[in-house]
Length: 251
Image (cartoon, rainbow, N blue to C red; front, side, top):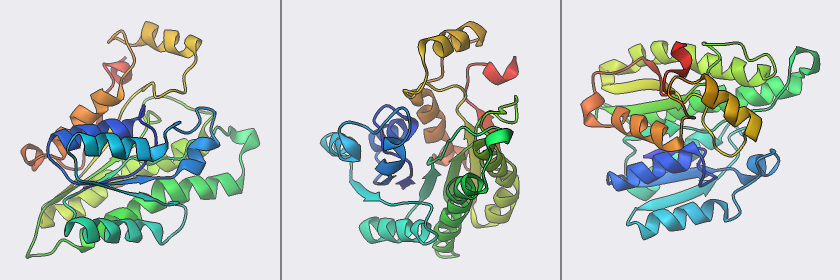
């Protein structure tokens, strides 16, 4: 399996990787530390190598590639690296993201292009390279990616992010119908407000107050849903966007 965006041990990619290793999967982890280092939350002090070491100590077969998904050739290179390591790739978890705050008045073409390149283009190219290895001799597979809450409520301060994430949300059904004849399912998770180290005390308190579940979502919540959607039990579930948010989006 491939899990992209697994740079920080506190975040969703790491939680998914931990769960998949527990379930016996061999993983190629992708990271790009320069992005995290430039954001307010910062990079993991141990780097992605700390997560790789943790997973290997837990018995996981884990390889790691650091690469910039803004580069058009990176998606295919990641799939090639996973095939070289493990022979075949049964599932793709496109968890990577670029999230930069720009409202309409501050919007730039440069940021729009970069957000689309990473969040939308790279995800589609990953799916293309993943699906290309599946044919009549080896049908079946799982594609899973992440959206945000833009389809439940306005997010005017994050236009490049929500535009590119909304594209993934809408692409889910179309790609699912295209790939289901090959036994490949395509689903999308909205992890809801998920505290991965970016929230301040006021934001944490506000989400807790408004969420019917009485708390924030956690990366482990997302990992449990991801693991099921990647399992054999979910072979009839495709084209769906599922919120794992304790009722946040149902308010």
